[in-house]
Image (cartoon, rainbow, N blue to C red; front, side, top):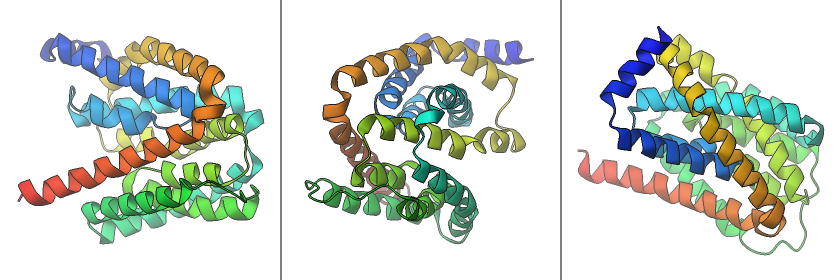
Length: 260
């Protein structure tokens, strides 16, 4: 059944589109391996240009879960203790984010998150004279933001990234802690997709077929971090936040102006 579904997808999708999806996954895997985050931020919009969103989103969910499990097995010893608190609070507050999404429009939720991200980046870009000391209290506060963003827009990253940049945490430990954190927040993604019927056998087959590309991208990102990560981690994180916020703003403005 999975093989037939995958074959049907291959028969109805242009080779260039599949190649584009593979390049998108490669770029997303490189960014995630280098910075510890950004896989879904890059993979979902770019693969959705080549594949139907109903296909690309569950595939990205599944890939994120697989590589997250592998990274967690490798890096759990480096998982900062304050991130444990963050993860627990995030899991507890995600339902509140879903509730807020239910009573507010998705467009307003995305606009709110985008504006908050841009305001936060403006503050984070200034040199830190007195970086915060990573602890459970700050981790819990960040976890509330992670949970709300996860529930409202399936984007848990910005508060956690901001936390890692505001504290005195070493770049490598922040990167590994983010990898493990996002695996925890992604755990509900695949079951939810299966419950709503958008993840099927072909989804698993396509994700499996994509693994060589993901492994290559992860290796490239790891090599880049070893050479340049400690010097450029902060800049890459901030630029990714800016790019994501501007893309979200542009999408919502486009929808408001042209999709009426």
